[in-house]
Every structure is written in structure tokens, then in C-alpha cells.
Image (cartoon, rainbow, N blue to C red; front, side, top):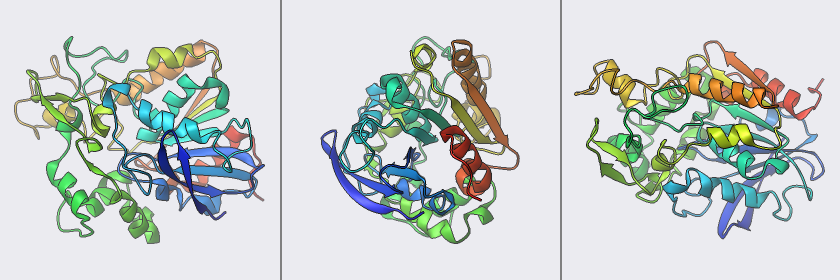
Length: 354
């Protein structure tokens, strides 16, 4: 399967979209993660059968889509609205289509938001290493209880400034741990050899990320709580923070509950109960000074939170399947594509190619 690039006016912005397969094929919507673009799906497309109709947009501020601002207070709502507008955009899906929605990392949160807002338009969810339904950074318990009543999560203040600067500069080198290439190798996958010949394609995808207060990482604000920063009201990392992205109750309550498949790698260092991007876990390791201890600021149990919410979703009439791939990192579709495709086709009700 090969994709073609389209430009679509939807939700008030110009969106760049990769499209593959026949217009009347089984609809699949692919939503990429943070610091990437729809190009992250390119290595997967040749493994998919021609019977699928695949649509993969660049989210706002990524790839070739407009660098529109992100209102963090809407908790991924800007991204979800952009994607929802594509469902009825001419030339993408057949009228009235209900796609299987695949969301990677941040895209998993967008997929959940899309289901909550438009449950009648989603045939199934494949959540690939998704952000917790309680956001990223700062919540304590499996039910998302915050460490203190006004704790908003670290948000944009938790971003590594050198990484942001290298992104903005288009750094393609490998001379430090915060270079985008080395972050790709060390954090996006468990084994950098799994990137193969696609490494430069994926790096270029990362470098399309729009940086600044309105996009990545967003605005940082001071906090009285460790580590001294909290989620602001603008930008990507803030729209992921638990102060703004908390949809567990809404997800459990959706009136139409399509099947959910949760695919993750057990060596993921980004979305994990021991995430190397969680300042509380880094503090526990002694890597961030001043950590006040587990009683006040424990690491976020991201996997436990997602599992608890999906169990409630199932108890309320839905179904879910958890697939943990041993030795796999944050990007199963890149690292373990055969198993990933098998789960996608099973969810879509499509026979695997002979």
C-alpha cells in the first residue's frame, strides 16, 4: 500500500493528509503522536492490505498542517476537533464512514477524545502506547487523584530546553543525548536497530514539530509545588497535563462502546509506570534535585491508570484487549509491525493477507 498526499480545509485550518487504499475500503484513521507527523506511519503502510482505506493526517503544528495554536485548556480538544472534521471532508472517507481509529501516544489521547465526542463515528479504537486517560505527569492514584488539590502537572515546564532548541534548529546530528536523532533512538524504540532505513524519514518527521508557546512545548508557569512548574494554558505539553486532559469518566460513560485494543511495549520508557519522562520518577532515581518523596509526589502509574479505566469501560458494556509486547518500546508499529498489523486487522474485521 502506497500513500498520496492531500491538502484539506477542515475545522478552519489547512490539514495535510496521507491517503491510501480505495475510497470504498474498510476505513482506518491513523493519528500520530507528539514530536512526529503522519510520516511515522509510512513504514507501516506497505504491510497493510489494499482492502483498507487509510487516512493519516498531520496534526496542527506538525508535518505540513498549519501551525495553528493549541488551547491547552481543552485537553487535546483542538486536535480531536481537527480530526473529527476529516471524517466528513470530501474525498477522504466514504460518506458516513465509521473508521477504526488508531492513536499513537498523544494520538491515543486524541482518539479517546474523538470517541467521547463522536461515539457513533468510531468503529473501534487501537490505542498504541497511549497517554493515560488522566493525562501525562503529576497524578498519583489509579483513579487520577492529584498529589495536592491544586497540582496541575508539570506541563511545558517539564520539557528539556536543549531538546526543544535542537528541534527548532533542525538538528540532524547525534552529538548529545538531547539531539532529536538520539532521542528517537533511545526513547521512541527499545532497539534503535529497529529503525533501519527509516531512521532519517522519522527524524525529518520529528523536525517538522512547531516549537513555541502556542505549540511544543507551550507556556510554562511557576508553581509552589515541586518541581516549581505547572501546566500553562497554551501548547502541547500543557494540553496533555492532568489539569486539562482528564476524560476517564466520560470514556466509561460513552453510550456507544466500540471494542478497544491496547497495544504497548513492555520496554516503553515514555508511557510507563517508570517513565523516564516523569519528573517524579526521575526524582525518585535521584536525577532531579529536591524531590519531596513518594508521599507527596510519587511517579504516575500510567499503565495502571489506563488499565483501570479500560476495565471500567468493559464493566460498563464495552470490551478491551491488552497486548503487551516483550522487549518492545514506545512504537510497536515500527518495532513489531507484524504483530501490530495482526491486531489492527482483527479489530477491523479484515482477513490478513495470504
